[in-house]
Amino acid sequence: MSDTDGTPDNPFAGWISFLNDVFSTIDSLGIENLVIDLRNNGGGNSTMGDILLSFCSLPDSLRYFVGSMKISDLVLKHYQMDLNTMNEALSSDLGYEVSESELPFTVKFNIGNSPLLKPHTLEELAPNAGLSEPPRKFDGKLILIIGSQTFSSAVMFATLCHDNGLATLYGSPTGGKPSAYGEGVGFKLPNTGIRCTVSVKYFQRPDIQRDPSDSLYPDVNIPISPEEYFLTTDTVWEKVLQDLKD
Image 1 (cartoon, rainbow, N blue to C red):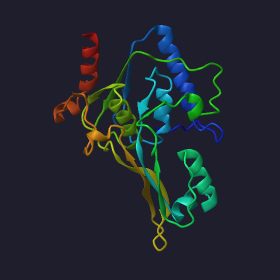
Image 2 (image 1 turned 90 degrees about the vertical axis):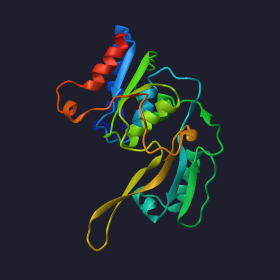
Image 3 (image 1 turned 60 degrees about the vertical axis):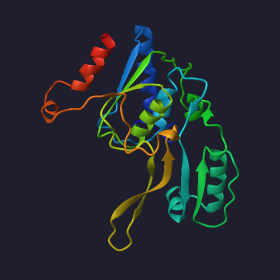
């Protein structure tokens, strides 16, 4: 979940262009089933999942992740901000005033809002998307394939879809948890020079009634035996195809 073709002004340029082509083709061919394979997806930028959903027909409101973020000297250095600039940025992003004078402190996001929020539009997610026309909206069936190597933002995307009833999940339990720490900030140890990363955000899944959970479990669980793992046939994909035919 990363866009190597993005630019500073439009960091998701390649992803948006790809999705626009894909959904244009889906629309022209009248395709009714879209399968997204998230196995072996280690994550990246969660906004890419939100952008993908902006190309789909969604309910008037969705449940989103809630959570908290610890602001420290390390965070200010990472984002190249001073405390005043960080307060202004947080106030704009969170929708309530942040005016802290000492570090560290913790802010909460999506607090005070209804659990059900209006879905993000492409214009909100990527103001410089550059599309000449609004994206075509896919209104067919969405299927996600997950597995033990699905982590981070890939799990968040699958969890958002699962907790809002947007997709059917096939495969096996994810390696990452639906509620987890993220937003890695890098730093270097002063004596050894070893580079490390620490998470500064905690994300709680949209349907908090499902917590605590050690994994995101599929709707259709398909255990893979050691023998099947080394076969050229994809057991999970074959099950998806069979169910779609039935």
